[in-house]
Structure formats: structure tokens, C-alpha cells
Length: 231
Ligand code: PGA
Image (tube, helix red, strand yellow):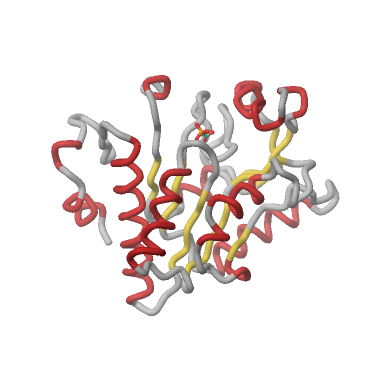
């Protein structure tokens, strides 16, 4: 699907004038979630209709949670089928076991995966418990798996207060690939409430690179609230 076709389904009244990429403003989070979920659902139907798996790049956080709720509703009430969907989560904290309450894997399982029918073997995470010796190979393997899946059809992203995408913190380079990286102090501060206090937030992360993300055939980047308006 081209961007033009996608635009036709979005309310033209929400299109922001003068933006170089299609940008839309909505009054409520519910409207954003419905538009984003509808776009993802269409990608799934289109790819599956062609006999291909739909490949999603996903993140966690207060931004996408309502989109996941809407996708779950579409699954339960409108029969949206996730059985031929492949997912890649684009970031993870380093130093947490995958079953840890704060791991992003756990977040995804609780808030999305356990409510829809994506086969377990189609779900891919970066492993925050990977050893330092194995981390580079782990990151390369993640990239290989994306490639083998045919590339990401649609990536759902939020944006951090410091402008990060996944955990590509300020000064990440445009051609970066999946890697071990350090978390920015603002990201650690913002994650503090999930870890009871900022000191408990890991200092390192694994993240898909900007280049990994920008290779997606479609990107939905959602920014919520006035505090994100200037980013
Ligand atoms: P948030 O985080 O959704 O919790 O605001 C966005 C981000 O860090 O990308």
C-alpha cells in the first residue's frame, strides 16, 4: 500500500499543513489509537491477502498501550486474525531477566501478546539477559531474523521526551543497526516509576538501530500530549 492510499482513509481535516511527511493531529487518544490500529489491521489483511506474513515492529510504553487495546478489541470483536503475524520488539533493558516485572518483554506479554493469537515462535525479542560476550552476535541475529521475515511492514513507535525512537537516544547515528547502547538520563528518569526509583533503572539497553527502523515499509509514530509537541 502506498502512503497516498493510506492518507485517503485518514480524515483530511486532521492533516497538518506544511509537514514534509504525512502528519495528523487528533483531539483524543482514542481517535489516535483507532487510526493506528486500523492502519496496522489493514497491513495485516493486505499482507495476509497476498499470502505473506505481516511483520510488525513494536515498542512499549504509555503511548502504544491504547493501540494494543484497540488491536485486541479488533481481534475479539471483529475477528482480526494474528495467526500469520510476525513481531519484533525494538528495544529492551539490559540486565533484567525476561520474566522480570520491568522487562519490556513482560510488558508486551501482559498488554498484548497473551490477548491475541500470534504464534509464540513468531514473536521476537531482544534478550536483556544476554552476556556481554554474546551481545554482538545476538544483535546481528536479530537483524538477520528481520531480514529473513522479509523486513518490517509496519513499525509502531512512540517518541521519548528527549526525542528517542526505541532506545536510539540523542546523537544516535542515522545508519545505526541493532546494538548495545547506554540509556540517556532523561529516559532513566522517565522509567523511574516502573522501577520504584531512578537508581534501579538499568543504565544500558538493546535497541534496533535507526537504520533498522527506517527500513520499515511504513512507520506510525505517535506523540501524545502537549509536552511532546515541540520534539
Ligand atoms: P511513553 O514513552 O510512551 O511512555 O511516553 C515513549 C518513548 O519513550 O518512546
